[in-house]
Length: 369
Image 1 (cartoon, rainbow, N blue to C red):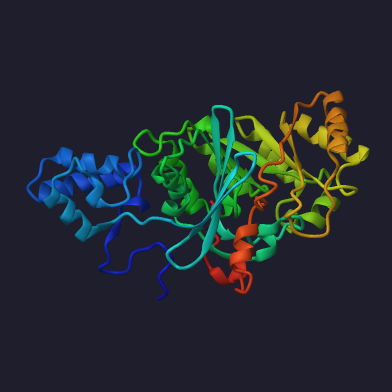
Image 2 (cartoon, rainbow, N blue to C red):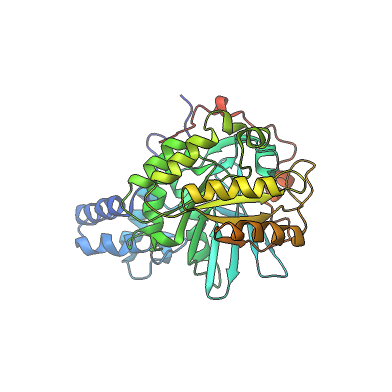
Protein backbone atom coordinates (compact mmCIF):
# COMPACT_ATOMS: atom_id res chain seq x y z
CA UNK A 1 0.00 0.00 0.00
CA UNK A 2 1.38 3.41 -1.02
CA UNK A 3 2.44 5.64 1.88
CA UNK A 4 0.99 9.17 1.80
CA UNK A 5 3.53 12.00 1.77
CA UNK A 6 4.41 13.14 5.28
CA UNK A 7 3.19 9.96 6.98
CA UNK A 8 5.64 7.69 8.76
CA UNK A 9 6.41 4.24 7.39
CA UNK A 10 6.33 1.41 9.96
CA UNK A 11 9.39 1.71 12.22
CA UNK A 12 10.19 5.26 11.08
CA UNK A 13 10.86 8.14 13.46
CA UNK A 14 7.66 9.80 14.69
CA UNK A 15 7.06 13.25 13.24
CA UNK A 16 6.49 15.55 16.23
CA UNK A 17 5.25 18.35 13.97
CA UNK A 18 2.42 16.30 12.49
CA UNK A 19 0.38 16.19 15.71
CA UNK A 20 -1.38 18.75 17.86
CA UNK A 21 0.82 20.59 20.40
CA UNK A 22 -1.07 18.99 23.30
CA UNK A 23 -0.44 15.52 21.84
CA UNK A 24 3.26 16.08 21.20
CA UNK A 25 3.82 17.51 24.69
CA UNK A 26 2.06 14.55 26.32
CA UNK A 27 4.16 12.15 24.24
CA UNK A 28 7.40 13.98 25.05
CA UNK A 29 6.71 14.16 28.79
CA UNK A 30 6.06 10.41 28.85
CA UNK A 31 9.21 9.83 26.80
CA UNK A 32 11.28 11.91 29.23
CA UNK A 33 9.97 10.00 32.26
CA UNK A 34 10.54 6.70 30.48
CA UNK A 35 14.20 7.60 30.06
CA UNK A 36 14.86 8.75 33.63
CA UNK A 37 14.20 12.46 33.16
CA UNK A 38 11.71 14.76 34.88
CA UNK A 39 8.43 15.40 32.99
CA UNK A 40 9.29 19.10 32.55
CA UNK A 41 12.06 18.09 30.15
CA UNK A 42 9.38 16.92 27.73
CA UNK A 43 7.67 20.29 28.00
CA UNK A 44 10.98 22.03 27.29
CA UNK A 45 11.34 20.03 24.09
CA UNK A 46 7.72 20.74 23.11
CA UNK A 47 8.33 24.50 23.29
CA UNK A 48 11.00 24.13 20.60
CA UNK A 49 8.54 22.60 18.14
CA UNK A 50 6.48 25.75 17.48
CA UNK A 51 6.79 28.48 20.12
CA UNK A 52 10.59 28.83 19.94
CA UNK A 53 11.43 26.54 17.04
CA UNK A 54 14.90 25.20 16.36
CA UNK A 55 16.16 23.38 13.30
CA UNK A 56 17.37 20.24 15.09
CA UNK A 57 17.31 18.45 18.42
CA UNK A 58 21.01 19.27 18.78
CA UNK A 59 20.09 22.98 18.85
CA UNK A 60 17.95 22.56 22.00
CA UNK A 61 20.62 24.00 24.28
CA UNK A 62 18.43 23.91 27.41
CA UNK A 63 17.95 20.13 27.10
CA UNK A 64 20.59 17.62 28.36
CA UNK A 65 22.78 16.24 25.57
CA UNK A 66 21.88 12.63 26.37
CA UNK A 67 18.17 13.39 26.00
CA UNK A 68 18.80 15.30 22.77
CA UNK A 69 20.51 12.23 21.33
CA UNK A 70 17.64 9.99 22.40
CA UNK A 71 15.12 12.34 20.84
CA UNK A 72 17.04 12.37 17.57
CA UNK A 73 16.99 8.57 17.52
CA UNK A 74 13.22 8.32 18.00
CA UNK A 75 11.61 11.47 16.55
CA UNK A 76 11.81 13.88 13.62
CA UNK A 77 11.08 17.58 13.06
CA UNK A 78 11.06 17.79 9.24
CA UNK A 79 11.93 21.10 7.63
CA UNK A 80 10.51 22.53 4.42
CA UNK A 81 13.51 23.00 2.14
CA UNK A 82 13.83 26.54 0.81
CA UNK A 83 14.41 26.19 -2.94
CA UNK A 84 14.06 29.85 -3.92
CA UNK A 85 13.49 33.21 -2.26
CA UNK A 86 12.61 36.41 -4.11
CA UNK A 87 12.19 39.93 -2.76
CA UNK A 88 10.08 42.58 -4.49
CA UNK A 89 10.83 46.27 -4.61
CA UNK A 90 7.74 46.78 -2.43
CA UNK A 91 9.03 44.46 0.30
CA UNK A 92 6.89 41.44 -0.62
CA UNK A 93 8.84 38.19 -0.39
CA UNK A 94 8.05 34.93 -2.13
CA UNK A 95 9.32 31.56 -0.94
CA UNK A 96 9.37 28.34 -2.95
CA UNK A 97 9.61 25.31 -0.66
CA UNK A 98 10.51 21.77 -1.74
CA UNK A 99 8.74 19.01 0.19
CA UNK A 100 10.10 15.59 1.13
CA UNK A 101 8.65 13.93 -1.98
CA UNK A 102 10.02 16.56 -4.37
CA UNK A 103 6.82 18.58 -4.70
CA UNK A 104 6.95 22.37 -4.49
CA UNK A 105 4.68 24.87 -2.75
CA UNK A 106 4.71 28.64 -2.50
CA UNK A 107 4.39 31.03 0.43
CA UNK A 108 4.26 34.83 0.21
CA UNK A 109 5.12 37.31 2.99
CA UNK A 110 3.45 40.73 2.63
CA UNK A 111 4.56 43.55 4.96
CA UNK A 112 2.17 46.44 5.67
CA UNK A 113 3.21 48.80 8.47
CA UNK A 114 3.43 46.79 11.68
CA UNK A 115 1.68 43.80 10.10
CA UNK A 116 3.26 40.89 8.29
CA UNK A 117 0.72 38.76 6.46
CA UNK A 118 1.75 35.29 5.33
CA UNK A 119 -0.17 33.80 2.41
CA UNK A 120 0.11 30.02 2.81
CA UNK A 121 -0.67 26.99 0.64
CA UNK A 122 -2.85 24.02 1.58
CA UNK A 123 -2.34 21.80 -1.49
CA UNK A 124 0.35 21.17 -4.07
CA UNK A 125 -1.44 22.51 -7.10
CA UNK A 126 -5.21 22.88 -7.28
CA UNK A 127 -8.00 20.79 -8.79
CA UNK A 128 -10.48 23.62 -9.34
CA UNK A 129 -9.20 25.02 -12.65
CA UNK A 130 -10.51 28.56 -12.25
CA UNK A 131 -9.99 30.20 -15.64
CA UNK A 132 -7.88 33.15 -14.40
CA UNK A 133 -5.65 31.29 -11.90
CA UNK A 134 -2.04 30.17 -12.50
CA UNK A 135 -2.30 27.50 -9.80
CA UNK A 136 -5.43 26.02 -11.34
CA UNK A 137 -3.71 25.81 -14.73
CA UNK A 138 -0.99 23.53 -13.33
CA UNK A 139 -3.41 20.87 -12.07
CA UNK A 140 -3.58 19.08 -8.74
CA UNK A 141 -0.85 16.88 -7.26
CA UNK A 142 -1.72 16.20 -3.63
CA UNK A 143 -2.99 17.54 -0.33
CA UNK A 144 -0.49 18.91 2.15
CA UNK A 145 -0.08 17.32 5.56
CA UNK A 146 -0.77 19.35 8.69
CA UNK A 147 2.94 19.94 9.39
CA UNK A 148 3.51 21.15 5.81
CA UNK A 149 0.75 23.75 6.17
CA UNK A 150 1.69 25.09 9.62
CA UNK A 151 5.36 24.52 8.80
CA UNK A 152 5.30 27.42 6.35
CA UNK A 153 4.86 29.75 9.32
CA UNK A 154 7.44 27.82 11.37
CA UNK A 155 9.98 28.34 8.60
CA UNK A 156 9.53 32.10 8.89
CA UNK A 157 10.64 31.88 12.54
CA UNK A 158 13.68 29.85 11.53
CA UNK A 159 14.94 32.45 9.05
CA UNK A 160 17.91 34.59 10.01
CA UNK A 161 16.72 37.11 11.01
CA UNK A 162 13.33 35.54 11.81
CA UNK A 163 10.09 36.95 10.42
CA UNK A 164 7.37 37.53 13.00
CA UNK A 165 4.14 36.77 11.20
CA UNK A 166 1.07 38.63 12.53
CA UNK A 167 -1.61 37.49 10.06
CA UNK A 168 -2.30 34.32 8.08
CA UNK A 169 -4.36 33.98 4.92
CA UNK A 170 -5.09 30.62 3.29
CA UNK A 171 -4.91 32.21 -0.15
CA UNK A 172 -1.90 30.39 -1.52
CA UNK A 173 -1.98 27.27 -3.64
CA UNK A 174 -4.99 24.98 -3.29
CA UNK A 175 -8.52 24.99 -1.88
CA UNK A 176 -8.18 24.66 1.91
CA UNK A 177 -11.70 23.36 2.49
CA UNK A 178 -11.00 20.42 0.17
CA UNK A 179 -8.20 19.44 2.53
CA UNK A 180 -10.09 19.91 5.79
CA UNK A 181 -8.55 16.80 7.36
CA UNK A 182 -5.20 18.62 7.50
CA UNK A 183 -6.38 22.26 7.57
CA UNK A 184 -8.53 21.70 10.68
CA UNK A 185 -5.63 20.65 12.96
CA UNK A 186 -3.30 23.13 11.22
CA UNK A 187 -5.64 25.93 12.35
CA UNK A 188 -5.24 24.67 15.93
CA UNK A 189 -1.43 24.74 15.63
CA UNK A 190 -1.48 28.23 14.13
CA UNK A 191 -3.78 29.59 16.84
CA UNK A 192 -2.88 27.68 20.02
CA UNK A 193 -0.65 29.43 22.59
CA UNK A 194 1.25 26.12 22.71
CA UNK A 195 1.63 26.33 18.94
CA UNK A 196 2.33 29.44 16.89
CA UNK A 197 0.00 31.64 18.96
CA UNK A 198 -1.57 33.73 16.19
CA UNK A 199 -4.98 35.18 17.10
CA UNK A 200 -7.95 33.53 15.40
CA UNK A 201 -9.21 36.88 14.11
CA UNK A 202 -5.88 37.26 12.32
CA UNK A 203 -6.32 33.97 10.43
CA UNK A 204 -8.46 33.94 7.27
CA UNK A 205 -9.53 30.82 5.38
CA UNK A 206 -10.34 31.51 1.74
CA UNK A 207 -12.61 29.19 -0.24
CA UNK A 208 -14.43 29.08 -3.57
CA UNK A 209 -17.47 28.02 -1.56
CA UNK A 210 -17.01 24.41 -0.46
CA UNK A 211 -20.17 24.18 1.62
CA UNK A 212 -19.33 21.34 4.07
CA UNK A 213 -16.07 23.10 4.90
CA UNK A 214 -17.79 26.43 5.54
CA UNK A 215 -20.12 24.67 7.96
CA UNK A 216 -17.19 22.91 9.68
CA UNK A 217 -15.23 26.16 10.02
CA UNK A 218 -18.30 27.88 11.47
CA UNK A 219 -18.67 25.12 14.07
CA UNK A 220 -15.24 25.83 15.52
CA UNK A 221 -15.30 27.96 18.65
CA UNK A 222 -12.43 30.22 17.54
CA UNK A 223 -13.21 33.40 15.60
CA UNK A 224 -11.43 32.42 12.38
CA UNK A 225 -12.27 34.63 9.40
CA UNK A 226 -13.89 33.39 6.18
CA UNK A 227 -13.26 34.78 2.70
CA UNK A 228 -15.27 33.51 -0.26
CA UNK A 229 -13.95 33.74 -3.81
CA UNK A 230 -17.01 35.05 -5.65
CA UNK A 231 -15.39 36.56 -8.80
CA UNK A 232 -18.74 36.67 -10.63
CA UNK A 233 -22.16 37.73 -9.28
CA UNK A 234 -24.29 35.43 -11.47
CA UNK A 235 -24.34 31.67 -11.95
CA UNK A 236 -23.92 31.92 -15.72
CA UNK A 237 -20.78 34.04 -15.55
CA UNK A 238 -19.37 32.25 -12.50
CA UNK A 239 -19.85 28.90 -14.21
CA UNK A 240 -17.72 30.04 -17.15
CA UNK A 241 -14.91 31.19 -14.82
CA UNK A 242 -15.14 28.63 -12.00
CA UNK A 243 -16.23 25.05 -12.83
CA UNK A 244 -16.83 24.33 -9.11
CA UNK A 245 -19.97 26.47 -9.44
CA UNK A 246 -21.71 23.36 -10.84
CA UNK A 247 -21.31 21.55 -7.52
CA UNK A 248 -21.72 24.60 -5.28
CA UNK A 249 -23.98 27.12 -7.07
CA UNK A 250 -23.86 30.77 -6.10
CA UNK A 251 -27.20 30.72 -4.25
CA UNK A 252 -26.01 27.88 -2.00
CA UNK A 253 -22.73 29.66 -1.29
CA UNK A 254 -24.57 32.85 -0.33
CA UNK A 255 -26.90 30.90 1.98
CA UNK A 256 -23.86 29.37 3.71
CA UNK A 257 -22.33 32.83 4.10
CA UNK A 258 -25.56 34.13 5.64
CA UNK A 259 -25.55 31.52 8.41
CA UNK A 260 -21.80 31.78 9.10
CA UNK A 261 -21.78 33.53 12.48
CA UNK A 262 -18.89 35.86 11.70
CA UNK A 263 -18.34 38.53 9.10
CA UNK A 264 -17.57 37.24 5.60
CA UNK A 265 -15.35 38.82 2.96
CA UNK A 266 -16.05 38.46 -0.76
CA UNK A 267 -12.91 38.17 -2.89
CA UNK A 268 -13.47 39.53 -6.41
CA UNK A 269 -10.74 39.48 -9.08
CA UNK A 270 -11.30 42.29 -11.57
CA UNK A 271 -11.33 40.98 -15.15
CA UNK A 272 -11.52 43.70 -17.79
CA UNK A 273 -14.70 43.51 -19.84
CA UNK A 274 -15.78 40.29 -18.11
CA UNK A 275 -17.03 40.97 -14.56
CA UNK A 276 -16.43 44.70 -14.09
CA UNK A 277 -19.50 46.29 -15.68
CA UNK A 278 -22.35 48.31 -14.17
CA UNK A 279 -24.67 45.29 -14.21
CA UNK A 280 -22.15 43.19 -12.26
CA UNK A 281 -21.73 46.01 -9.72
CA UNK A 282 -25.47 45.97 -9.02
CA UNK A 283 -25.57 42.16 -8.77
CA UNK A 284 -22.50 41.98 -6.53
CA UNK A 285 -23.92 44.64 -4.21
CA UNK A 286 -27.15 42.63 -3.86
CA UNK A 287 -25.21 39.50 -2.90
CA UNK A 288 -23.01 41.37 -0.42
CA UNK A 289 -26.01 43.08 1.17
CA UNK A 290 -27.77 39.72 1.53
CA UNK A 291 -25.08 38.33 3.84
CA UNK A 292 -23.58 41.61 5.11
CA UNK A 293 -20.27 40.87 3.39
CA UNK A 294 -17.24 43.10 3.01
CA UNK A 295 -16.02 43.20 -0.63
CA UNK A 296 -12.33 43.00 -1.49
CA UNK A 297 -11.61 43.97 -5.12
CA UNK A 298 -8.44 42.34 -6.43
CA UNK A 299 -6.50 43.60 -9.46
CA UNK A 300 -5.74 40.68 -11.79
CA UNK A 301 -2.05 39.82 -11.60
CA UNK A 302 -0.57 39.74 -15.13
CA UNK A 303 0.95 36.36 -14.27
CA UNK A 304 -2.47 34.75 -13.91
CA UNK A 305 -3.74 32.13 -16.34
CA UNK A 306 -5.88 32.64 -19.42
CA UNK A 307 -6.13 35.53 -21.84
CA UNK A 308 -7.80 37.94 -19.47
CA UNK A 309 -7.05 41.67 -19.38
CA UNK A 310 -6.77 43.36 -15.97
CA UNK A 311 -9.32 46.09 -15.29
CA UNK A 312 -7.53 49.44 -15.22
CA UNK A 313 -6.89 51.05 -11.82
CA UNK A 314 -9.30 53.85 -12.77
CA UNK A 315 -12.02 51.36 -13.69
CA UNK A 316 -11.54 49.43 -10.45
CA UNK A 317 -12.03 52.67 -8.50
CA UNK A 318 -15.18 53.39 -10.55
CA UNK A 319 -16.50 49.89 -9.76
CA UNK A 320 -15.72 50.40 -6.07
CA UNK A 321 -17.64 53.70 -6.06
CA UNK A 322 -20.65 51.96 -7.61
CA UNK A 323 -20.62 49.41 -4.79
CA UNK A 324 -20.20 52.04 -2.07
CA UNK A 325 -23.10 54.02 -3.52
CA UNK A 326 -25.24 50.95 -2.82
CA UNK A 327 -24.14 50.82 0.82
CA UNK A 328 -21.43 48.16 0.48
CA UNK A 329 -18.12 48.40 2.33
CA UNK A 330 -15.31 47.92 -0.19
CA UNK A 331 -11.52 47.77 -0.27
CA UNK A 332 -9.22 47.60 -3.28
CA UNK A 333 -6.31 45.31 -2.66
CA UNK A 334 -2.92 46.72 -3.57
CA UNK A 335 -0.99 44.93 -6.29
CA UNK A 336 2.07 43.49 -4.56
CA UNK A 337 5.17 41.70 -5.82
CA UNK A 338 4.62 42.65 -9.45
CA UNK A 339 8.34 42.27 -10.18
CA UNK A 340 8.80 38.80 -8.64
CA UNK A 341 6.15 36.60 -10.28
CA UNK A 342 3.98 36.84 -7.18
CA UNK A 343 0.83 35.50 -8.81
CA UNK A 344 0.19 32.29 -6.91
CA UNK A 345 1.74 29.30 -8.64
CA UNK A 346 4.09 31.09 -11.01
CA UNK A 347 7.34 29.96 -9.39
CA UNK A 348 6.09 26.40 -9.08
CA UNK A 349 5.02 26.37 -12.73
CA UNK A 350 8.50 27.52 -13.71
CA UNK A 351 10.17 24.85 -11.56
CA UNK A 352 7.83 21.98 -12.55
CA UNK A 353 6.76 22.94 -16.05
CA UNK A 354 7.81 19.56 -17.47
CA UNK A 355 6.01 17.48 -14.89
CA UNK A 356 2.59 15.97 -15.55
CA UNK A 357 0.09 16.95 -12.84
CA UNK A 358 -2.13 14.36 -11.22
CA UNK A 359 -5.86 14.74 -11.74
CA UNK A 360 -7.82 15.25 -8.54
CA UNK A 361 -9.68 11.95 -8.89
CA UNK A 362 -6.38 10.07 -9.22
CA UNK A 363 -5.05 11.32 -5.90
CA UNK A 364 -7.77 9.58 -3.94
CA UNK A 365 -7.22 12.01 -1.10
CA UNK A 366 -9.63 14.92 -1.60
CA UNK A 367 -11.00 15.44 1.89
CA UNK A 368 -13.99 17.68 2.35
CA UNK A 369 -15.17 18.14 5.95
